[in-house]
Length: 221
Ligand SMILES: [Fe+2]
Image (cartoon, rainbow, N blue to C red; front, side):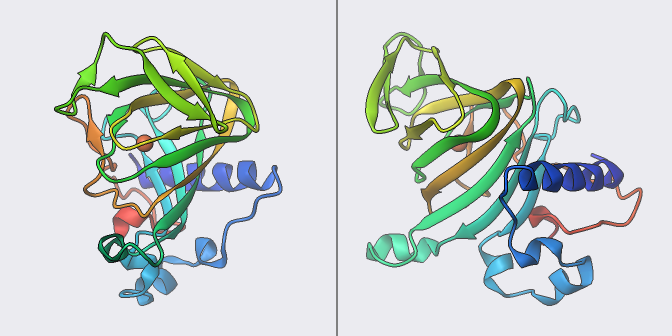
């Protein structure tokens, strides 16, 4: 992606998020120098901040996602079973913008429609070896109540609705009838190691530095 396109997405996303009364934390607005100076802080080591991806495909409008990680715990706490074991993201899936089929090994996540268009998820259960089970039904909690779908079925979340995706559940998602503001509440998360995609695909974009960055992305530090 061109840095100029990243800058435009940052600004449009900030305006979209604010239109719902949600405001990002102060470090969202740090300039590149201030963010670089925070090297070694939890912002860097836990991957907090702006995260825009086209999954390496170079077609952001068709396949991509805006994310901002507002908090993320300490993965070392997982082994101890106590501590900061949680993470939170705010995301935007644009109308018909696809986030490709994937699962997580460690992370359980609640995906929440915080407002805007509908959020549609395609879901599969895992086989015992972790691969996609294309025959059996898949059951997930949606706002605490179990919902069962055929393999590859679509779950439509209206604003206010959510789904809990336990580790192993395969999921892809996109918005319909407008751009969707999405919340994610999850287990402490390492995006560099805990995304298993169905097809070989990148989690982060490569950036063509045609202009200076407005704000650094997580993948910049
Ligand atoms: Fe996910």
